[in-house]
Image (tube, rainbow over all chains, first blue to last red; front, side, top):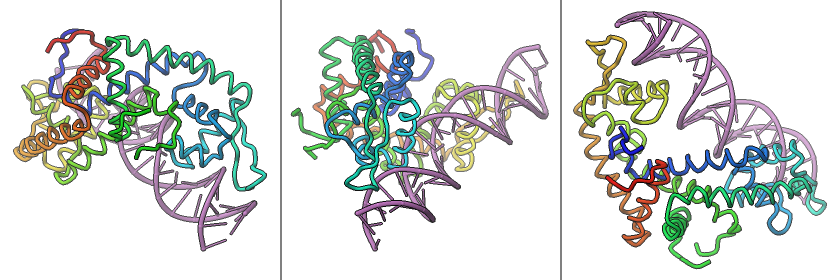
Length: 150
Length: 150
DNA sequence: TATTGTTATACTCTATAACTATA
DNA sequence: TATAGTTATAGAGTATAACAATA
């Protein structure tokens, strides 16, 4: 894998690097989560729904940064797999509270373990300090934040 | 922009970080290149076509890592803007040699300047050594290569 | 009137299968 | 038979507009 036919001009572009690093991680993650019947995207939805107080679909969509129409399909998928269920909110009957089922919570726990292991393995190609620095740098670039707290 | 409503669980995921860093860069790049009537993707095609000997559509597709059917649309777009033209290869009349026009070459030059400036500005949120380290780390993760030469 | 969820629709990006013309 | 380019088509992923129920 030392001689790559592509001109450096291409593979040195920041856009190329970010796109393909993301692509490779997505594939790695998908392979690792497939045996559990889920993927990184669904896992993120489960994690958002499990964190803190129960959320309406629109609140969850906000947390995930997706449109509320997109959220419909995401919840549909979770319900089809019995990982979550819609519960009409008594306080405001326009809203659906989305609640994880026991099965959803179990899957979340197991899948989170797999995700952590997958991240570790994916970053194992880098020395540990470099991996930590990468994560910190990505945090800045991904959020546009200059602050280093948290 | 200091208080983000999203749980860290989400924004600390490697998948999230890579996706959104890429998203933010793509948007930044698109804004910067829009006045020239192009974008990062098209620019990469132009760069591949300009590098070295003239390429057939399939060769160019290979360099870019896209399907040959995808390449058809890319070349269509370039031809529609008079940035490149298909020339039937005399040696093998099944092949289209794709050649940049003068206009294509001029756009490439100007757009490459914009791209370099855009990358610099995007990474300006990081200290210079961190930016260099990020690029090196991404190179490893994007290509799956362990070698640090080049 | 405004909001939540929903549906219908569309747009981008990309790939697979099948066609054509050449080899 | 195989290859280069093309077309038709389809599948993600995502968004906008319009509608029903509720506020």
